[in-house]
Image (cartoon, rainbow, N blue to C red; front, side):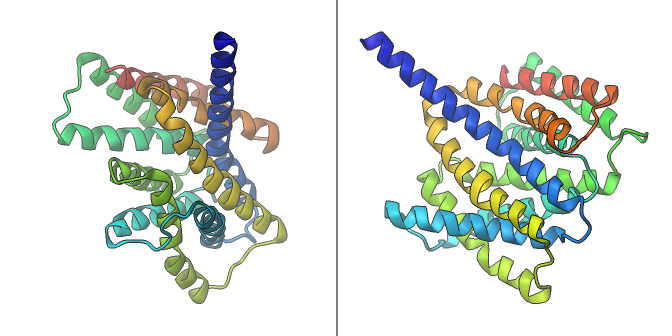
Length: 282
């Protein structure tokens, strides 16, 4: 009886983790699907994504009794979240979903590791080798060539990765994560309103649908699931599980967006994800 119960619990946890990782990958796929059409504005997409995420989280927060108004100490995280979303959308105007997810994931990890190192964390030989391996793969991916993503788009995605890394670091030890996520999304609404005042949303019907699914579904519900799963799994599992996000995105790009995966991307992925895996074992 007890074994069966624990097995059921483990399967449920694995299912939630899988849904979370698929939600993370879906953000890249939905954004790229919308922004291949030049009629859809990148900042408009980011604004609707943040606003729809905020509205869904506002409803969840009201039902849970969370504090909904952002606090002064939330401002840096709100700014980082907004920069992440804006740069993420702008980069996907000219980059495949797979390349974007790979760059984003690599830069997030490097950012968090660099800050941890600056705070005094010792990195062993294995972790140091992992960093070198991951950076070599990233540089190779970005070298000029037919399969390289445009440099401007890659730099924007790198900026998005830095912002998300900073956002994640700001959230460490900063109180109950679900309530904090709700406040941060709500806190972006004045910035979203400013964008819409300067330029009314430029989205097709399909663009609206993708933005709403990305914000209200993949972002809001995905992050809620992540914070539900995270306390119940080990740190190594959390780190290694995230290695699957660029791979899920790449598979989704092939199946749903007709993207091709060249040998250069595959080999760069092996270097980057292998290097990050080594750093998680430091």
